[in-house]
Amino acid sequence: AIASSPHFFKDQLVDHFAAGDAKYTQRYFEDDTAFKGPGHPILLIVGGEGAIPPSVGLFYPYVVDVLAPMMGALVVEPEHRFYGNSTPDRTSLHLLTPQQALADAVRLVRAMQVARNCSLSRQSSAYCPVFSVGGSYPGFLSAMLRLRYPAVVDGAYAASAPMRIYAQQVQQYAYYEVITKSAERAQAGCAASV
Image (tube, rainbow, N blue to C red):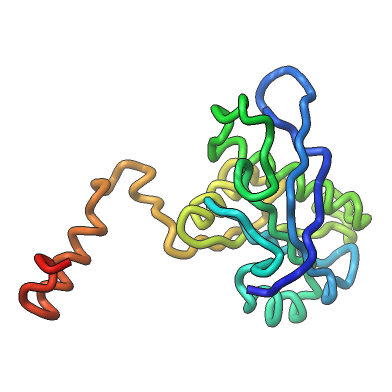
């Protein structure tokens, strides 16, 4: 992780799918040291189920230290709604959903593109393509960003994403069963001890 100063997106919608314009402030982190301006990518590190304190800042140093300079990219990581400082009104807790989190990421990315003078047209040389990155639940969100918002997200990397569990193609505890069997093979009695 790369410690950095937080930024605050004050124009995030509490509910992206209902009438109304209630907003909340979403905390996010960014690194623009390698960004070469319009025409260069935005690498979106997808936040997950936890706060992102400034002492942690941007996850995935490889994205910031290697990929961003190689591509001249802007790196942005939004904090997931209802975690850390990104908390809408507590009466809105029913809006803690992956669908709302995806829409949050899209709204923030669009704001980043506009703020950086990136064209929103893929035919323009000033278009800033967006690539999302995440692991585990954020990996699932990364993949879903590409699938649900192909007009905004140009590519996605989903590491260790539980895609088949969410698709209900794998039983809920299948992972734990594999780990338990592996532990028992490695050392007899290990599974029972744990």
